[in-house]
Amino acid sequence: MKKNKNVLFLGLVSFFTDLSTKMVYPIIPLYLMTVFGVTPTVIGLIEGIVDSMASLLKVVSGFLSDRIKWKKWLACSGYATGLVYKLLLFFAGSWGGILFAKIVDRFGKGIRTTPRDMLLAESGGKQKLGRAFGLQKMFDKAGSALGILIVYVLLLSGLNDYRMIFLFSAIPAVFGLCMFFFIKEPQEIKSKAKKPKIAFFDGLKQMDGRLKLYLLVVLLFNLGSSSTVFILLRAQNVGFADTNVMLLFFIFTISASLLAYPVGRLSDRIGRKALLVAAYFIFAVVYFSLALAPNAAILVVAFIMLGAYTAILSVAERAFVAELAPPNLLGTLLGLKSTIVGLVILPANLIAGVLWDTIGAWAPFALSAGLAMISAVMLLIFLKPSNHESPHTP
Image (cartoon, rainbow, N blue to C red; front, side):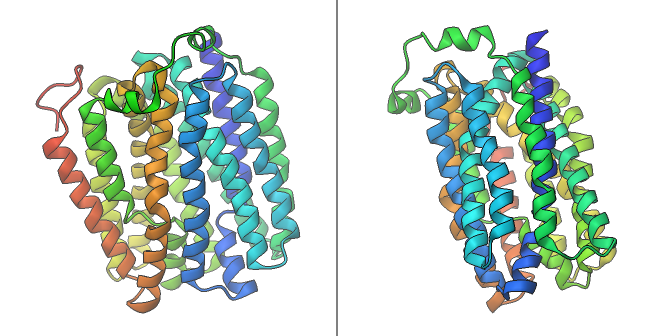
């Protein structure tokens, strides 16, 4: 019962935190462009720096999580920086100040994500990994949707003072931190802290071959996986008003929230491979549609499909890594996957920004779609099914 409560309250942490974060995330690129005159290339640089830093820190926090007794307070300290982030946004007077605020926030994200995922994996159990990750992602995206809806209503009502929105967004961040008082360390996690640890490089040598292949695919795919900011700018580029861009993002998050838990349950039944392949194919279709002359209808459908991709990948990917990782390197390998993303996300965002500025708004989306299609084909052909999957599973 305590394990189930853990999954629920970790989901509520994500709900309130993402409600807070998504009250500011969609308006930051608009704020940078309209108030500070920042170009897409600089936005790509900012997003690349902060996302890379967050991803690179995850292997460090994962390594620590495999060796310390109390995961929840490590995760809590990372979530606390989200509150500091909103206050820094309020006081920022330049795009450099925005960059610093985002660095603080991404530092916290890099610290909190892996210990949180370890708590989810241990609380959910091997047979219900997909459900645990799916429930957390459902709450995560529900909070995102509500945050976007709130900022949409505020903008529609005439509140164009972005700094006041930054300040309001700090309130749900406080509620998210309060949820940690209800989260318990599962007893088996505490006992694992007493077991002999596997050295990092020895653990990498023991890594399942399927996991090695998947990490290679992750590297390739993320070379073209630029920040969601570029999708929001693309919507603005084809004529959507700022407030309507908020609605598109709302559609995306609702789609992801509604699908996350069913996808998690499905992955526990049929395995992860089919869902991972499907996620990359959906991503390719979405980005091809964004590269081609998109109209309003295409963008709405694209955002719904992007929500489906997010739900599928975020659930199946974490469950896949947790399923194949040696128990004493669970945190390290969960973090390693994110660190691989961090190694390429800065150049990916810079490439996207340069392609946008020099060739056209369609170019970064065409690159992303092509790499996603190659990644899907690689998984389809070369990734062997897990033990509980049928060999005929795609």
